[in-house]
Length: 349
Image 1: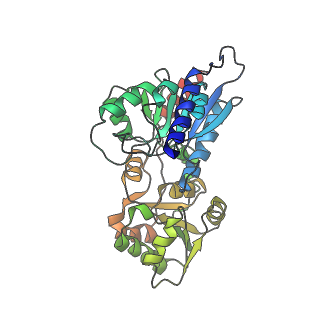
Image 2 (image 1 turned 90 degrees about the horizontal axis):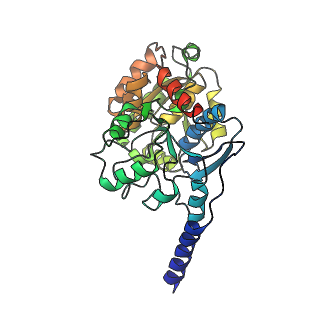
Image 3 (image 1 turned 60 degrees about the horizontal axis):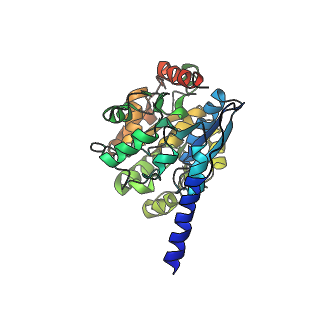
């Protein structure tokens, strides 16, 4: 009976959404846009760092538009999908939610039922690929072809993602890198210290564990800095730290809040060395000397494109080179592609 009632409610919502009269969108005085927001329902505070930059940059373009947020990490009701269908454009904010097999990889909670509602609505904004994968399958290709907008340019955060989509004929896409990096201009890079600070803030990544390498990173930091601040970017990071934390006496935990992290980055003479990509980018935004130890393809691909200071986690001993030598931060932004992407949107206003 419970299953019957659930299915009855489910299909009732489906029919309502399909039969509802559409809102007239002609002659709107303002743009009505949506953001597919990974920070809704997230357990990873890095998604908030991404959303901050996405919203800021979209507000520069759509300074008077209405903005509605929809989740990517939670399933949408048919009412929500119907509301999404009434938006002029839907910007999907830059996480690694694209994949080659959407029916089994659910970083973005989308399925073939979205094709009617999101048809030609979605614009990628700094999106990347979920790890290195094989060719895009037919199910996924059909969804991307249906929902991705064909009139404006899409923004990918690395060349790997551009190449994956071009392989299935989606050619209106440019590599703009992640929008979180757009503020790291040559002028800002000059404000970032070259030499080692007195203290360091670090991160762990519980879903990509390597106890030997991560413990070695903490050992190096503990031995070379007066104090180590470990920011808990995801709640399970603290449990992982407890598994590998024996023998450290100068590591202080920072609570899982953006307020705590932003505050520590304002300290003078502090470095960032850790495995979380966007914690490292937030550090750069605050003029903090930064090294990221990559645990997957995201930081590595961005590092290749824009000269972000990234090493593989298995090369953890190279952390000592960064600590003990001067490092000059030089982020090489794809400024031409960023401007091309923005102009594509301005022309669609």
